[in-house]
Amino acid sequence: MTIEIEAKMKVSDLGVVRSLLEKMDATRSAEIFEINTFFDTEDRSLLAADQGLRLRVNRNMSTGEETYVYTFKGPRLHGKLKSREEIELAVCNPRDAERFLMALGFVRVLSFEKRRYKWKLDECSIELDELPYLGAFVEIEGPDEETVLRVREKLSLANAPIIKSSYIAMLMAYLQENGVHDRSVTF
Image (tube, rainbow, N blue to C red):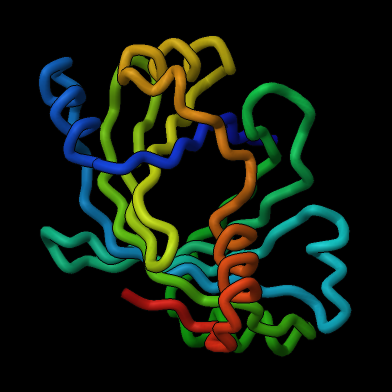
């Protein structure tokens, strides 16, 4: 069982964090454009159980290569950081993958785009994310809470509040609060 352990913080300027990563000789690994589509049952049983089911299209912005991944996220575990079981499975074709889920009774809940800039520092993956409506975020994922918090401090983000909400939860709240009915969020 893989457990995802991460700290997510909203930032006003990704450039500041990018500059710090460069100064620390962090490794830049990829620039990805994502399309994330979330599914649930008609009665929202996954949401009620604090679980998630996603189909993600990853497009490498340098090469144009695309990969497609199903992700199941289990309920959040207790702790200072956001931690939850995560199971991923590569798929060959996003249209067939979506049709497969719909044949099993799942419905599309929300689709959204994201720009993600991936870095490595110490034992952590650092992702600089940009999302429509929500803005810029830094996610630090690592092997344990101590390592994640240490890298968070190195990036001068120790005073930034940790956000445990998922992007889908934040976007759904934004759409509802602002009366936006479109469930396909793009830049």
